[in-house]
Image (cartoon, rainbow, N blue to C red; front, side, top):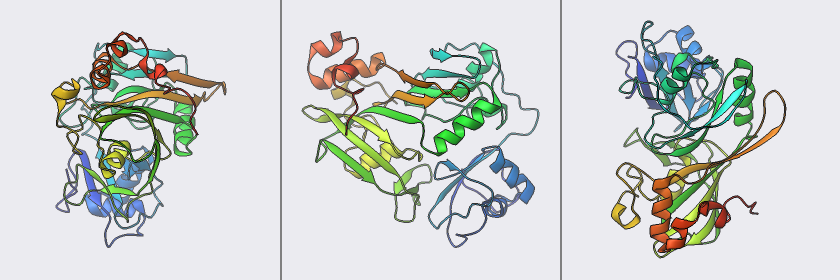
Length: 335
């Protein structure tokens, strides 16, 4: 939903684009745009409820024209986020953090329209400690994945772990690499896209490349070229909303199955189910916030993407391969 000047903003996620008010402090900007007090706006910023082009900033931050601001206004007190017994695939766990291999189709945290069935509901249902500096609605979350993106997600158990991991993420000390299949063929085997991103002025649910947006950098390495698609490894140097999807679409090679950015056609050709795109967070590397140990965690392709890859490769051996990402060199270091 978009911000409204007519009274305080209702609970939910609000989006607006910075215009003539560029350069204004973020707390003042949010307060004025959403009809909140400055204290309310500052609290939302401090608790992680405000992002500028997908990045959390301080109250004193001054956004440039074209920047996309998202504000999550929590529900009135008394709207509890309930624990639910929902199966989760936990690939690493200790007293400070855990790593979830999220299934496609699962929303990460509760919000209007999705108060149940989310990853946070499932985490609460498992029991045990979770960091909650942003409130129960985002308990433990260090970063997010889109609903239809599968793969590895960091969750903090303690506030200390959350602070350290969030700082590492902001400083680009956490490595996140994704496997994607895109329509068509990149011009080179290795392509860097350095193109700023901001909220699409015509459709605020979407992100677009725009000169006034925030800098966004993605490296793409082609691992295999098939008849109509490429298998890619995507390395984020920044963490903007929908960054991989928008950067590939800007090249004319959208993610296969991505209905939002032009890649949704031809599902039968690639064997993808409805509402699924071929994007998987397969590789996560981070420094443990307490022990300092380096953790290198990898996730194989889920069954639906594995079948799709075999179909586009036109090779039955891919389907029989227990780990096609390793076979195609996804986990090798590329220059």
